[in-house]
Image 1 (cartoon, rainbow, N blue to C red):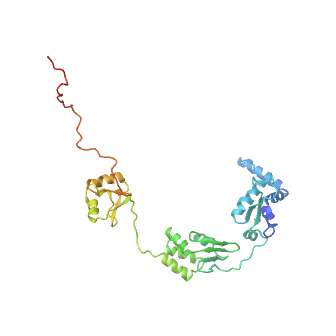
Image 2: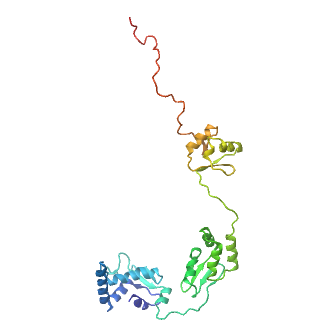
Length: 298
């Protein structure tokens, strides 16, 4: 019923939803549909759904999501409290794709293959497989979606796909499943896939700049501090391990005569470890009181 009503819409005309809803309510099939929905609700123990509510969801949600309808608002239209939601009345019109899909006869494609219009724009032909199109979804952007579908395959999209873990050979095979690659795009893909080096990730809590190589070596090798740094560390400093806080680092380095500076200020340890020379508890020593502190006994 909804599709039949949409076929009556003219080219590019906007129609109020309230007018379409009243047209649907006048259809002779509505009473039968209402009984069908009521019996279905009783069978599944659910609340009955109104026929026009089903049509409203088709028009307001399903068809716009498929690109068949455009929705708009018109504040000049009279508001129908029974059919219109709060706010401006909703209007609708068929898109170019919608007109092609709801037409009485299916449009016949010209059978042209998919091809690159220029270096980066791929125009899909009617014979393109849906699976092949979905396979290149991570590395394309939609340029134009009307009677034809144009996809943009640019260097930045290729770099994004490569950084996500797709191999260059896989990208090339997916694109060539639709159309041959232009020479310039083929060179771009080859250049983007070249690996010039490899870096290793090391988790660290900080980096300690130490210009003096002798001091740096002392920190790296002395027993109080050698466990605080990652080995090997880059030239010019030492990588601090992630489980070492600044207070512990400053205290350990100070024991071998090295101060830590942060924002131009020397870091002072906030806590002091207990000394091993703390006297144990025991009897208190007696001291002789000074003269005159006690009365002389007779």
